[in-house]
Length: 328
Image (tube, rainbow, N blue to C red; front, side, top):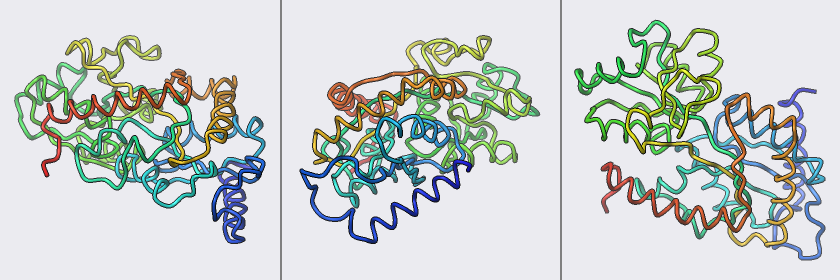
């Protein structure tokens, strides 16, 4: 049975439990946890890089958790719609969790949101981070990042680039690059990697800033990778420069992890943490991570929470500097 059919079956089980009233009400301290499937919200479209990696993590973690992990794709608002809906609608019982990315700490400074990134979440574990890069279609005239930037400088407001959404790291990385180099270009937000890359292939935008959902297109010759955003060159693309080489200090890797609604019992957070840490160490899952150019960046619950407090403070400074902070 393929992954999609398995998830449909599991989700049907979860819905049946919900309909029976077994997911409602206060947390029972005597209940063995988990005694039913756990829902993992993936705040990106099905089939994208994040979805594939988290599907694999769920499969690697299930034996250690002792229950099925049901993937629930809730894309939108640069990956923040899913976790925002979780803290507003899910009981703090450990049965609904979500992937969280750095955008969650950035967006409140850009626009009004329905959540507090520190107070409304119980952080479980930091997992890994993305490799980001900027790609153009193979038929484009730009053979390298310098040609692309030179053209953008000489043609202000004419070059368009897509991202996974306003406030996403894909967006902010190029906003920061433009700010540092004095480039004026136009940002086109999409709901996720798949839409972003399809827009590039369709000729609707000049470039795409995204995580390594572009890897297969680069390897097949349909896209050209101009630069990556990490502190050092990616192992798979050692000949491709980093933004850090062009503008020292410009590094974006956006570590991500998992969270539950605030108020989830600490013991349940511990159980989830321990299971997902074992899943993170699974050899088959490590192969999937490698395929998507991700490396483990593990933090336990306490360290991840403290880290996120610092990230939130740093994002406030960055959004103000880039002129992206909201005014109200």
